[in-house]
Amino acid sequence: MYLSKCTGCNLSEINTLNNNYSNTCYITSLSNSTIIVNISKSNLTYPNYNKSIYKCNQQFTTIKQKVLIDFNMRNTRPSNTSSILEDPILYHSQLEQHIDLQNIHLLNQNLILQLITPNSLHIPLLKITSSLSSYTNLEFYTDGSLNRDNDIPIMGYNWIFSSNFTDNIKHSGSCKEWPSSLKAELVAILTSLIVCPPDSNVHIYTDSASCIATFNMLYPPKLTARHFQKLNNCALWNTLKHIINVLKLKISLFKVKANSGHPLNDAADLLAKEGLLSKDFLQINIRHITTQACHLTFNDSIIIDRNIRKSVKRIINFQYFEQHLSHQNLHKIKDYSLENIIDWEFSQLWFKYNPFTKPTSKKYFKHVSWRIKCSSNNLPTLDILNCNYPELLKDNDIYFLCNSHIESNEHL
Image (cartoon, rainbow, N blue to C red; front, side, top):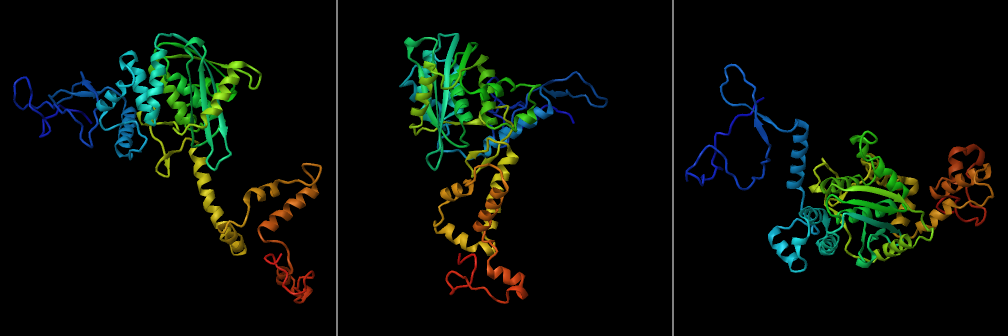
């Protein structure tokens, strides 16, 4: 395989220097199936071939990844909350009505506008970036909060800029999808880094030991690329690495003991709970992260930011549950479920209840077995025993308490 110079096509535009068509491409816009590959002239020569030879500036595997990213960007349906607007010039002019973009570094602008959605979060973050532009050493206290009281769990996050309290700089918000306390803390750290000036030193104080442990092993050889994709919130961790690399930040994370009475940590915790009230749920647009080779989505909108195998297994488990309820012995339970007769919350408490003093015992094991048989209509009632031992019972299947109905699981 070799690359030769383009011979020209109908996509070529008129050369402005000599006002005529040439064999050199002057394409000002990409077609739907074009991707630019940077090449350079090679010194290699081959017999019986007198034309110039060119070579790619990047490895073949890197080009494959970029092609895949380009394909995903072209074929992913734009969402309503996407920050990629059809007219970025118009959007910049709208932003300049609220904030002076000249005081904000271009790298911070691009990161916020490309990665953060919805658009309503852009102006608050850009204003904070402008306020922090004069600092080179920054200190933050971060915290997250998880609320599972509603049908859809919500996470709140907050950070406080503690290098100079007179500026009174802080930020809070909310997010959802794949809820966990770790993700809430990670979003707080991510949003604090995206507003930092380039080439600055950042100290972050957090009460999440898990965040610190994962951050310290993000880079190889501690964590290979294969194992990185198995991390929970791997897309967020990849976004964090992208922000650090683009802004060239020097990050240090410090552990703060939770609920220890530290005033700044307690203040961040309180503001994180207030962030739960925000309806502008933060999302990360990972299509602009070049190191994110690909990603899977669930229900056409939710990025699977978890171990793929475990996530797919959980989705398949719903199919198994459907098959389980469709069993002929459980058709009544399925009907009751569809009619909302069964209270699953109290059923769960009933399954977990231990009436005995010891957590493990033979009596408790038999009791659990009895509860499982009750819930699955598998108690050894007289109708079942008559089928198994007809000569012993001889059609004696009347329930002794009522003396009118056949003893069966449904009757019980």
